[in-house]
Length: 323
Image 1: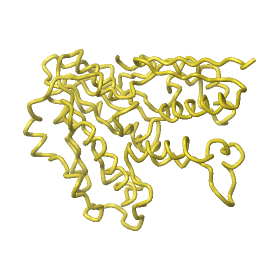
Image 2 (image 1 turned 90 degrees about the vertical axis):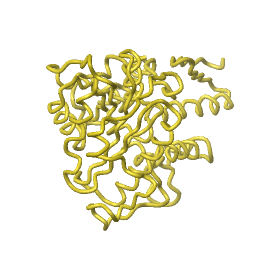
Image 3 (image 1 turned 120 degrees about the vertical axis):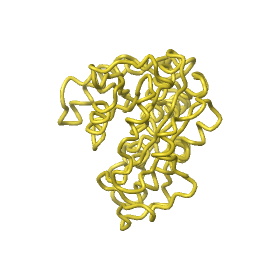
């Protein structure tokens, strides 16, 4: 149940697996969720394949661009969801919120020293491509970046699309093929690695796990002029709730085409972007929920039916005329 080859990239081909390693590391840096996540799924599968435990490290720097109370709070709320989801599993979770600039330096090298393999997220923008390349160069073990960004794998792009219409044409040609590659909705329920007896002391002493329940953005050297938004909490659960309310409640989806660009009156836009941007919400999950809604609604209209089923990690979609 590895991620499809089209979604996996070896960051530094000169590095190899460490046969003496004690665990696999999944550096969760762009897809901050435990469900519908090819990165976590791939890391779990690799750990089972190598017969070692899995360590998930989720680190938050204080020196990224736009580091603020709003961004930090949203990210930490997501980290709490990840912690809670992993608490009942054999996976070791290590959250680290950098207390001061550069305090996190050396964390990945220390973790990688005892790792068989490093797995991380493929993300094409912001500072993450540079950070992943830098870490992969410093550590002495193979690093695999896994793309869980969208419906279509990034590697399928034929060029940089400067117009939305051009990208839509590209997507329409291959979307049915892409829909056959389904991440497990809950990989933790299917893939169960061994349990680790403890992280190396050099890791826990040098970069101790942050107490996420005691987090206060005011304690960190970030921009305090941009406050957190209480009405938009971060995390996978809040993203899931937003999908539920927008897709299945009211008439937001039905009226989206006519109202999405309106500046006056009720807004029918999804407002999914905060959860999508920080990886708390999977685009694939949005697609699945939307298709499920459309299938039910269109069937009730007696025009055609769309059946979208998930079974054992496979997807089938079929349409037919009601006539």
